[in-house]
Length: 398
Image 1 (spheres, rainbow, N blue to C red):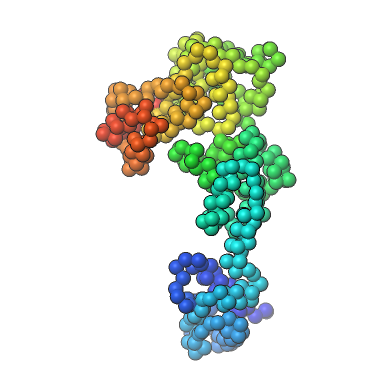
Image 2 (cartoon, one colour):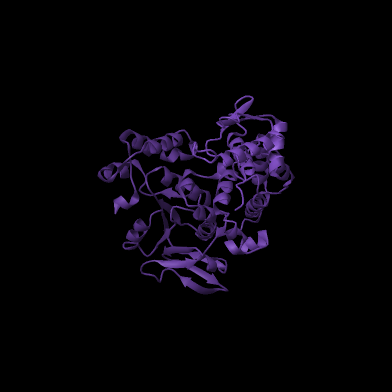
């Protein structure tokens, strides 16, 4: 049987301990590494203890350490750049500092015409921030940056395997490298100034749809006098549906013309509220389920409907909470004359029996919006919510 390699094990454990402490909270001069895991009790055979002593002697010939051969309690590893280099050289690896320098050299050399991403990279290099990447995996970092760059510059939506082939040169590379979580974190940081709080609660897959990364086609639900045409022929008449019609995002790109004959268009955050409204919808009303989330394709659809709507009033029905107000503001970026529906103080008071108590986080989010001028339309109801310590979901109005 091959003898246990004490030398490699001790070296690796020393490096792990150093990396756990690096680069902050290092004690001055040295740190101690317990040898107890290697000699767990007195019953360990003497020949194994002798092998450990030999290993420590070999290590001590190259690396500056101190230990007691008689007790084998711990090692003192002395911290200086030369000693750290010798440790990693013995392991056949680069030091954490060298790996970090290689990473920032790569990051500095990554040039892009995407302004947000370029600013983000410059800030990372300046502040020496690494938390979004594995500094030892530069190929993965390059993939993430190329995907973020393509999304910002191209501004279109793609299926995951399609964009993986186009950007990474391999249709399955995105899934094989499991880039969803890291790409979502990166995109949130690159675009943080343009995001509302509700995006923090989305799954990574849903969040990435906002920037055009899709696994499957998106399905839109709407009902009312809306006509979609291709080559001057009706391909879908949404006034035909007694309940809700559906449109795939795959079909959206094929539509040449949209005609909205409604007098009012109401966008619903909540599906239950949407279906409840359909039971009483008038023929001249258009109802759209916007799901409380604006993916790239959903933004395109709503923008095209708005541009095709001459003299149509647009309303949004959302929860009377911070998230509902955020969604309204994001929708108003697409529909500037959008108005809130049943999102005021009167609605809150009349349905107070169905309200929910605010959490501490709810209060903090609402208080931030009271000093943000973008939310000035909602300041009266926000003040009332804080006073009564309640919020109201639209489903409770059914």
